[in-house]
Image (cartoon, rainbow, N blue to C red; front, side, top):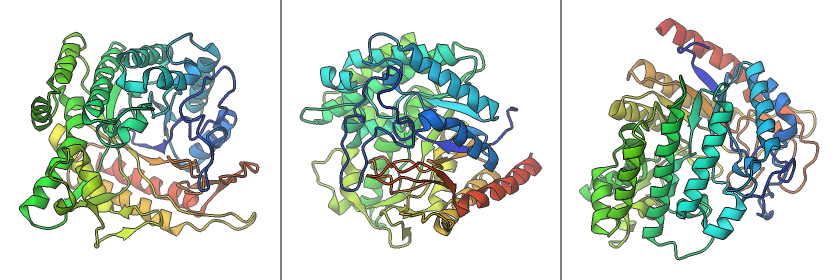
Length: 460
């Protein structure tokens, strides 16, 4: 596939797709022990892609997708996280990747998507531990070396900046403690050290590329007041820009670094600096991000004693200029364009929108086609704004990956919050037959991306 190929594809995590939670030597992750709730499933079956990946890849290929960003499960490869390698797990991913290649779908591997091996969470409290960081780097090197001849694109952490705000504790395998700000900064520092070591290792192989990834939170001030503007800018710097700067340049935001000095956390930056002396070839070849919605910050809601990492959660208010999905996420396609262009302007690296989509409640009655016009409108508007970022703003964009474009459980385990172009016949508490049923959006997307490919070819 040529360098000019534009990637259209699908993006997922292992725990939301594979199922087979205790099959072929897999060890438990923190997700495998979560129980079903009133509006959520457990994680033991997901959509059973472990056994049905050929079928799913056929659906992707038929729609015109040529890229799949998936995750390799740490506890499928190393059941307890830091012990013996499970060869059956590696062999599964060998077959999985071979099937992607057979379907002319480019594999993009993410190495961590929040499913910490349960043993490491229980024994060491997850990524707050240096031992767990070292264990993750060991796992990453095993996987990279194994698949280096088949896989060109690597993302060490999904939405890595989530380690810098409230989600950082849950996402890092942290099971107990005070959830102090110093602990949060320790988790984020360990993730950056691991990223640098892994990225440097990726670059030891010819033609392989690595990208840091953030969950980009586009934010607007609630008013023209200088306080709203300042608090919004500060939230953006701590939550979005700090990690992007590190991925692109190896240097963190001066504002964040100064905050850490003022709060007796400078030793964490010293640890990162020492790491970079040994792993200098760690800067990203591309910058990946997820984008679902934007938000508004009202500075009056933010405590004077709050840390900037928490400004987003404390100050968030509704944007009266935007529509809102049934699940409370505000729809902002222009924000998607602005995000792409801002990242490219600031860091001048290829930009890779790696997750984008809308969740909705849907049912299938056995005969009727699901008429998901709201999903068509969402993706159409976002892709059209992406095209403006490319054609008008001059952004270098690698592709567009939708999130979970075959229905999967949401991040909270809700199967009935559906993102897909393809319906999977199960509910939260009834596995049913897991039949895959294309929705109206599936047929629309195939035609739409063919038109966009024609536009991109003419532009080149």
